[in-house]
Image (cartoon, rainbow over all chains, first blue to last red; front, side, top):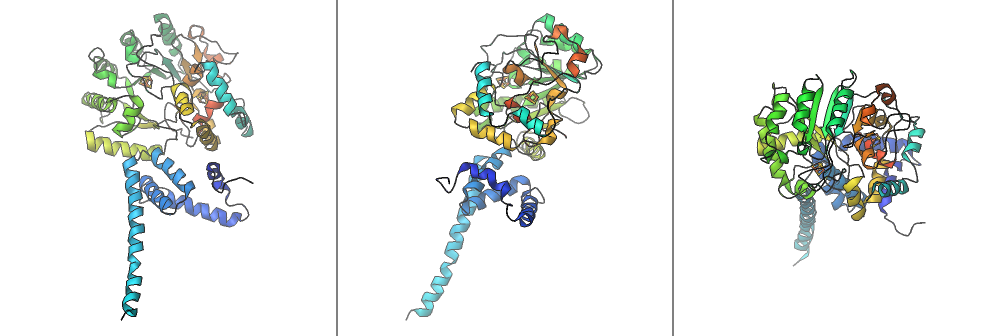
Length: 111
Length: 334
Ligand code: SF4
Ligand code: SF4
């Protein structure tokens, strides 16, 4: 048993996640590939979205994979950082938006 | 690192599955050449630049260059009807004292003639006349522009080189290069500035076209994406930066059996500055000469022996079969 939950080389295992449930695995990969490939949005735009999601979701594998992909597609460090700020702003925004619930309850309860 | 040290290091890293074993697993070993369609000549190790990824370790301090006799032998060899392209590279080919003479000789051969130029050199007074020499002889010009971000290209090639390349591209455009209807071909080369693989050639070409057009008014014909081969200075960089193991792992992971049939050595013969023959210029740097059944020097060129030779493969060959594949002509069409 390895000593750490997350290891860099685990990223290479991603293609094997269909093990034990190959039918669903195949469906997932078909979906994953078609969703992340260029379409109406370019491959570059999708790579930036994926990078922002990966950082918001704190997934070390996806951050590694999509930082590499962004570099491979020639995206600038400033473009990657801007995408991450979109993610960060969304997290801050949706946190603050939920303050509405708190404010509503406070107003309901206070004398 | 000496070529022996480079070979040993690559062998050690590939001990888990050698390239030959990988080829065997897809019934492609031994790998044989199909033809010689391109004669690639590394005519000099001299260069005005000293790029951090340069696999031939060229620099202003190097002095090696191909002799006139060996250049003449290249012309004799290239007269073979199957050889369609003469591909001149270096170093900076312009720094070879006989490049102008050679272009003049080769231009009459009805072959495709291309020169790989770093373009920055075309701004130097001493070499600016090559702009006209190339255009007059209809030479195809291939310019390496690793990245559209100024800072990245400059980190790889040296301070202010990005600006010089763009300026030289403008001069080539002004002579008709890369412009519709002129027949003067200007191709660009992208390669990763770091320890990662190139992305899709189509996506990158579109981005280059849009940004170079909008930001600098530059036009070009095609963009080729090259995977950096772990030899020469690039191997030093990988080792020094602690990326070597992971990079080799990435190349192996991205192995694409469909790319094997189209690797460039199957249709290209590489001639070193000393006239010796190699399967490609990466093998040249590792001093892996042609397999024993083929002649070792351009003066002994024998088409039939060379066209079907067995290719000498080692661990660095994984860089030609990663993803969409890579060659001097960019991603491989399989
Ligand atoms: S990569 Fe090209 S331009 Fe740079 S040092 Fe090497 S030969 Fe010269
Ligand atoms: S590195 Fe050279 S010999 Fe090896 S596959 Fe690539 S072109 Fe062929």
